Length: 115
Length: 111
Image (cartoon, rainbow over all chains, first blue to last red; front, side, top):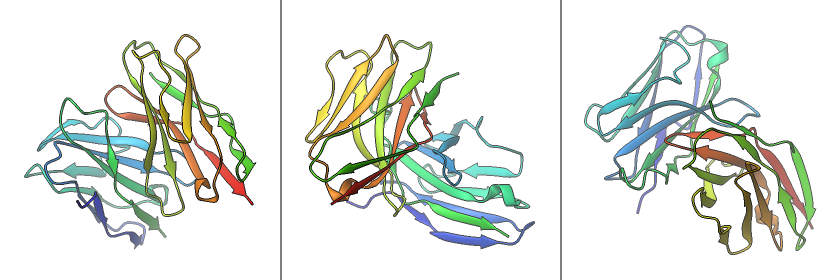
């Protein structure tokens, strides 16, 4: 079956622009996670959804970052007024169900470059 | 707070040889999961192997095995019979609910 997909794969934004990054999880997966991976670093947790509920957003670096999953499937990560330090790869992962929350399946990521 | 440390930024190994990647972590939790992920240049994070902390037996997946030392909070990955396709970044990760990653080890397998 299809894996986790993310779009766009690459995004170049001018400083100050708003961007929206999309994640399509594996069909039927309950949990969805967003991670930020800076160049040369490991991914860092941003936020987590269980169905449409955002249960943890403690990793969002500022109030310019906003994530939603209104129907419990597709999720969008929005960054307002982008800054150069927002340049990173944004990874999305989904997980099948609550009991198997230890298995996360990753998408290919969106590489965001802010000029 | 949990932390994961990978002290080897880069490693290299000759094809068919064995290599071990190190990982230590810090947590006050008793039940958790540990993972090794592989990230090739395509950026796709691929699960290599998983260990449940309450299981004493070390996990193995074909050429990949771990040495899990819970008391020492150590979780190393051994790759046997290294192949050119093993060249990638390798990340150790701790999980209670969300994944906490180390900074990665870049592994180069050369002919």
